[in-house]
Length: 111
Image (cartoon, rainbow, N blue to C red):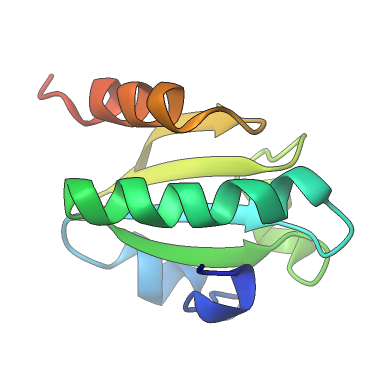
């Protein structure tokens, strides 16, 4: 089972380069160590993202408050979908696998 510490981590210093400047779509798992639902969501998110061919990175909101504030993260867990440098979807809170997949698929539909 994948845990938050298994995911590539992004920070205030690296977010712009590793996520915003990256081509394609990146899913950002915003979390905190004290957040139980964050730890429950991550393995499900990683599995669904793999099925959809998406890259996932983790952002610890407590350790990277500047980026969390810039992204307007108000609750945890928060999942952000970033496509070609733009946040195109935000999901707040834990959810069952099926709902997570359906919501990610909706965000990924061509405009």
